[in-house]
Image (cartoon, rainbow, N blue to C red; front, side, top):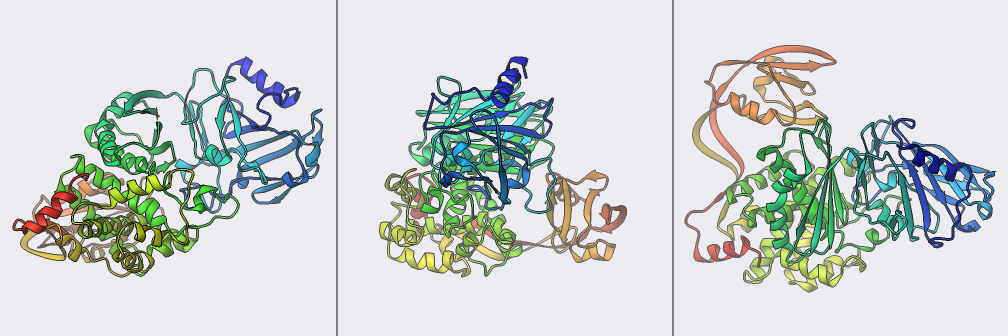
Amino acid sequence: MTASRIAAFAGGLLLATTTLTQAQKALTYTVNIDPKTDANLFQVQLEVPKLHKEQSIYQFAATAPGTYQVMDIGRFVRKFEAFDAQNKPLEVKQASVNQWQLLQPEKTRFIRYTIAETWDTPVTEHRVYRMCGTSLEADHALLNGQGIFGYLQGWQGKPLRIKLNYPADWKIGTPLTTDKQGYYTAATYDQAVDSPFLLGRLTEAKTKLGDAEVALYCYSKTDQVKAEPLLGYMQQMLQAAQAFLVQLPVKRYTFLYHFDDQNFGAWEHSYSSEYVLRETPLTPESANLVTSIAAHEFFHVVTPLNIHSEIIEQFNFVQPTGSEHLWLYEGTTEWASGMMKLRGALVTLDEYLQEMSGKVAYAQTQTDTTYSLSKLGLNSFTDEGQRQYGNIYQRGALTAALLDLRLLELSGGKRGLREVMNELTKRYGPNKPFSEKDFFTEFTKLTYPEIQDFFNRYVKQAEPLPLQEYYAKVGIRYTPVLHTGQQVVAVGTANPSVRYAGNAVQLTEIPSTWQSCGVAVGDELVAINGTAITPTSIKPTLMALQTRKAGEEYELTLRRAGTEQKVRCRLIQQEQIKRYNFAVLPDATPAQLALRQAWLKNL
């Protein structure tokens, strides 16, 4: 950061001579981002107009839209102060984990606080997802609005002006635009939270998608990923998305990528999305993985941006509140990301069906099959709901896929879920919420009476999904357990089940052959035959074993209670059994083929 920027910020903080003649109605925030002097800390100042006793509470976010997790950002506040117009300190007190009370609100003109980044600040529970948090490092920073800004009680809907002071050689990526004075502007606190900032040693690239401008900003720890080639790899997905959506419901969109040591995921916003992913050399294979994640996040411009209930319209940052329609926001979005890739020729039909098979396997083996999507949405912020949360991308997407097939059947192949979603976008839009209580009824009125029964059975309740019945309508056979009669080499009667903790791979279920070798549930799988096991290497490494001969030995390196040990196991030969198998019928009827053709294209 240059000396002039530091001096300007210090002058604002210490002398408090800034007037409020500009943007009288807006709340002006200044954020000091200086990795050299404030490691892991952000300095924030808020200039306010005349306050009243109704604005005596300064609120930090308990959660944020689209995260479905408790955040309690007040835990990261390190110093909180209030000052009058003459820069004299005023008394404040902490009222709760996320609230500070101004004891003399009528005299308050400045609020200043120090807040720690979420990435490197230890907490005992509710660790904030990295893509949803804040980070400050020597060469970059990530700011999510709820991790930096709070708001005065009753003023969640007021406009904001945001000034960021940061090193002069840094670039900045954000969906927000600036005013003539160089302040970023947000219409409300909700929009500020909806608009992340990525700053630092970034590369950038831009393109046009119809009338929309698409920007991509990229931080790559060792410069293995650059914005321009990454955007090039994403072009086909963006074109497929445009065809799927007919017309993009936004005029601009920003992708923010952070490539570092581990995969953490992505967070969608109305006009942007941000990604915290493991840095690997940019190849067609790695770009395909990045693009697949982006396809999901990009579709969120439809829902919840344009289709959402009143719970999302003005979000409750004080008390986390679940929505019964999480199936729509996440499940339908996950379905759409797959279908637009299929219809845009990014994947083949067989590849798409293999992906659906994986979703069935997860839903059947990794979750409570009696837990409905409605219940999951309503309980998404609870520990119980979090244990089932991954199923929203599995059963949620499968349910949307079946809803699409049912709509196509009832309309004679003229109108599927994509077409209904486009109708809903026109009916509602970003500023008109649907009724949380009445949406199932509204959706049914827009479509067909039979859809109410579908919602009752497969969304509100958790009846087994009729995969076999529905996919047969388009000439695709679904078989839960398919005996092939072929003999194959395997590590056991089933592959191990695992969960990931950063780069670590922990065993949650193991075949009996591994049990007899001395492997135990809970062990960390460190290596197979000397090949290090990571979330990305485990599948190809296990597949490589299956090319060897039955009876051959292989070595597993495990970590148990902090101690590494090696065990040796033998490959076995067994019948190949395909589970949750989808296969295209070669002898489909004319009616099945006709509906399949409608299913495979944007109508």
